[in-house]
Every structure is written in C-alpha cells, then in structure tokens.
Length: 159
Image 1 (tube, helix red, strand yellow):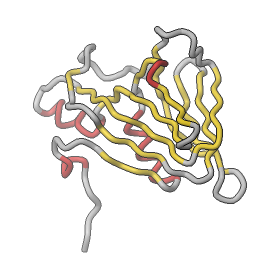
Image 2 (cartoon, one colour):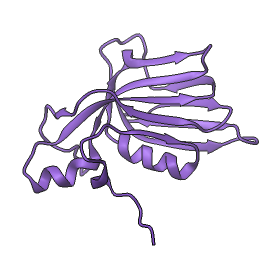
Image 3 (cartoon, helix red, strand yellow):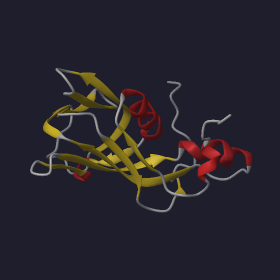
C-alpha cells in the first residue's frame, strides 16, 4: 500500500512544483495564498509565451512545524510562472504605480475551447491578472532561503 506524500517529507528543501490540471493548480493556489509582490515584479515575455511573477509567499507547508517549535512564521521568494500564454489582461493593477504592492488570494482556471482557457490570479482589492493560455501549465519554484516574515504573524482573514 502506498501513502500520499506529506509536507513534512519535504523538510527544508525548496519547492519546485508544476500544475498541468485543475487539481494540481488547487495545490499551487493554496501555497501562494497571501503571497505579496511589488507590481514591478511581474513580467510577460510575449515571445516566450510566459508570464512570471517574483512573489514572497508564506511557507504554508511549514506553519504547523513552526507553531510546534515556537519558530517565527516564514516567507520565501518564489517564482510563479504561467506558460503557453497567448495574452494577458488585468483589472485593478496600475502598472505605472511603481510602489504598488499586490497580494495574491488565489490562482484558478477558467476553461475555454479545447485545451485553451484562462489562468486567473485573484488579487486583494478586487484586482486580477488573467492569462489566456493554449494549455494549462503553471510552475512554482522557491528561489531563496526562507526568512522570518517581517510581521512575525500569519495573515489574518477574520475581518
């Protein structure tokens, strides 16, 4: 009998995950919930058909261990990449405001014709990025060592 992998199995190694279907995307969405990024860290490489974001995500996979050992909540810089991008649109994102900080609430999939569809990044404050893609392919890769979250707290969704 086999058993599913557990977050604890990953130890302190950086995440390097991909999503090729809606279930996989749900896992990535949970891992990037509450990630923050400056608007200047969004890149659409039209020729490469790639949308990339350098995010500072909560290490949700480590939260229970941190609580158990009374360690601070950690964040880590990660690259969130959407591939096969045909076009990108946004709502509530002022690219001219170089001081704007965005917060990712969720990453979701809106199916279209055949394998095409939209990868939607829902942002706090009614913002969104919507990437029309030829096929669903999203990656998440940690690129720095974890660091103590400046606030020392988990994001609060209570009000």
